[in-house]
Length: 219
Image (cartoon, rainbow, N blue to C red; front, side, top):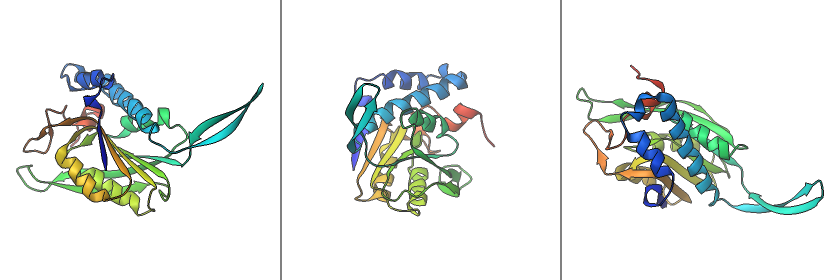
């Protein structure tokens, strides 16, 4: 398992992250969604460097040229609803990719809202067998939603290559996902890895609830 933390690099993603974390910037949902999407584009480009390629001969109006193109089919999956702008950013890069959607969300299991369970109730996906699977979900806090999404998608087959993409992660969440994936060929991509979570299982310092900040508060 390879873990790549983009915040350790000199990249424009750090500017987008700074704006996402800023309370004043968060007041504009469109700008917040736009930065989530832009991070998705940047991360998709980085992932594209890790794919397998096969040379294809392309005919131009004046001749032919050999160009390396992605070898395997790509599926971009996301966890509803927070993952939608992140997912859209990936599609700007992988515009020929198939798509998958999983409804996996956290539910507090005690009155104090300190223990979290994950509920999955919807899955729309093609077969992932033998394909490059990218699961894009902005928040990798406890890791429960990502692990549940992966396990749901795995019911359709075993992917050849796996990329887990998040905007903010914790080490605890990364460990849960690593355990779920096991020894398969996989990479976890993060725009930042934060120190931990508070008693309500929100990433600290983080930036709050990605779904609420993108689309408004839910009941």
